[in-house]
Length: 213
Image (cartoon, rainbow, N blue to C red; front, side):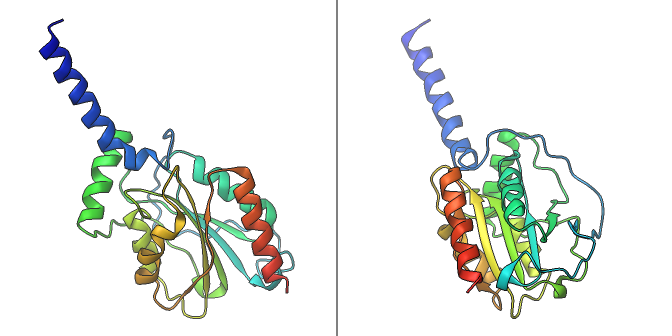
């Protein structure tokens, strides 16, 4: 193969990897499916939906999350193990993000345009929750833009949001600005960048110890 041709191929492959890298930082594979529900009741783990006995001073807890590859869902399930009385809610974008290259291109465009992509499902009676544990992957240095859509759909006055994310190198703090703008009346608590089991356990230990005071 001529040297010039080889150089062009290497350059093209490098460009593709640089395009995908910001999205791949938070994801590894995609098996997600989309639903067409317009409203959805969070999945309750106890017979009494008002039971907060396992949540300390957090009050009534909702674990709301989006997972592109399954990584964030794994963290959400680990969080649920620590707060078994919390309700679970999976945030579903109205339009699937497809494969990695499609998701990377679309996520970049939405980020640059400060877009608000539609979310297909809705939490019934958000008013009942005192605390929201909010999970998402990091895309292009922040939360996916439909997370802002989700937050702007509710009044979080008097509520606390504890965010957690999956990301290889971007910390959760980089997404705080988006969260604060989308939920200006909420208190944003210390978040988790779930890049290891140790980090997740330390955050959960801190969260439970602080709220048990």
